[in-house]
Image (cartoon, rainbow, N blue to C red):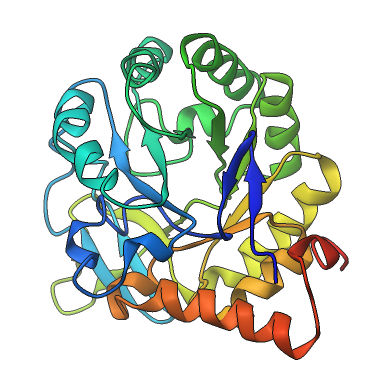
Amino acid sequence: MDLKVEIGGVVLKNPVTVASGTFGSGREFAEFIDLNQLGAVTVKGVSSVPWKGNPSPRIAETYGGMLNSVGLQNPGVEEFIKNDIPFLREFDTKIIVNIAGKTIEEYCDVAEKLSHADIDLIELNISCPNVKEGGVAFGTDAKMAKEVTKEVKRHSKHPVIVKLSPNVTDITEIAKAVVEGGADGLSLINTLLGMAIDIHKKRPILANTVGGFSGPAIKPVALRMVYQVAKAVSLPIIGMGGISTGEDAVEFILAGATAVAVGTANFRNPRATMDVLNGIKEYMMTYGIKSLDEIRGIV
């Protein structure tokens, strides 16, 4: 059984990683799972300088998922390089670093600083709905998406995966634009824009009023978008959005995903990634599948 997959020339031992922002840099999960078993760890978003994030409350549980408006709180790329990379390099797994910025120059600054760091891939976050500048402002405009991708590629020595927003009319238009910008891979989807209201206090639950909706309820939307993008472009795709079982992951691979990321499920079940990995193996054994290449995108 061959579980290896390749993204931007980087070979992952298996297709399972985590969604940025749901796993930190892995420290909190290392007591529950063996990080060596993951194909890659995708870390929390990092920016050129520390970001405080949005005011609280910024998490709300909803039917079928959760809302968050964390706003990419992080200590900045230099602290990340100093503290998190040495920890992750203790394990036999690839490192994917999600990067954020409010301007193209800030994105490029992070990419350039990471070019000298011991990581494997960059995930360009142009799809966070919880920051007022940058983020989704780049990810919902094809011209800007292409431009930021092109500039980050110029400043990065690592392959660049671009994380796409579902909050657009036609996600294939954005996918084609970042391909033209030189992307080496795609991640989709980021969270959907959502809202919850406390009817007793008669006001929004989140201090930011709206936030990113994730969890099992968004899986059909994510799966549809992975299917559409896989038909439209030829880059490897990391599929994500409501994946919590091996069966979920196989659906994404059948739709065209090269790899899969476990997100919100990590909060409910810290062993979710291992359940997904074992579920993929069981499916392959049941149907006599030797390589995921045999089934990828066949739907």
